[in-house]
Image (cartoon, one colour):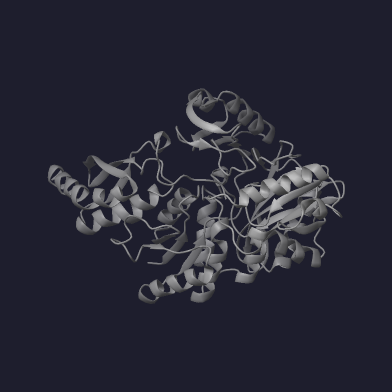
Length: 93
Length: 409
């Protein structure tokens, strides 16, 4: 089941998610699927980006759950502090 | 399920904490930013682009969405979004402050006019037109004074001047700052700046929540590092305050008067005050919560975050308590020491190992162009501490910072 789900998630990443985030120089890698939880890692412009959380939860997770209702949650394993080229940088306001 | 609209600038530090709080509450989250998300075409009911600088257009854009999928609350997470949030809420009939009140709080000159008219203690002030000769503009200004842009925050562009020469240099420096590509100002904020009397004394920040016109103080922070200029870099915040109870009560009273004078009655408020032998002086009152990641110092009741309180209030949900945990807490905003490019950071583990330190978060990334105050607006990161006393919190923060080394080329 997990391998099958993993393949479906990977297909979504390849066909829908990465083409979308590529617009901001970003990419997403599937790390694992365990207990219907999807573990992702973000790179390029997404790593350390001020809007990465919005992209992940309101974009990627929503899309994956709509296409694959059996997915319970999408979790970000990215080390955002190590991002060297984030698309948006945060500041205090 | 209630639907919540969060106004999240792409550059804010506040996104993660507000999104986490919204998830905790289990609401349906709609995110609006000033630049498009790459996923907006895939999720048009949950991601949208609005111009925060044009509140009427933002309200019209959100009204289109709300006509299809009604919203229960709107929250602007930082200074850039407060007026747009109020305009959207007013248009949709949601809980909020009046647009005029929030706009007055966003404009340092309007704010001071309101506060002065109501007799709230503030420094003497005047507005300076950037087109005027600064030498002539300096006439009638008492020194030392502090010059400020009308609409920037985080001490950006705030400069002390002790004489006419420094005044002229400061005016020119602020004018140049306002022309930078990363500064979005329009209207009066692009044409004027503020000159006000420098008030000696200690500085504090009050974090509060307005409910039905009543101010509830959530935390009062001491700022133990002296803020005497020429720039006003904020570093350490520690709560509870070590000021005498009577002084703290006076600070709360003056802040409440300032909110009333501005017409603010609902939602978060972040106020900055100076305190000396003459009592508290209001420097700023913003209709938003504390900036940066600083809210992570605050926990309420059994662990509720500041953002959860703000969202519950906006949604009209019950709030179990507004009482902060008793344990002293604090944050250090790690300042940028000089301009350059960040090459590396050392000592994070050693800093985290200091007793009382809970977290060290480096928010600047390797390769980032660093711009110190007064032109800059970012920090290298944040250090968080909790301990048995405010003194121990402050000591832990200083110890941890001393163990960090930033290589800047």
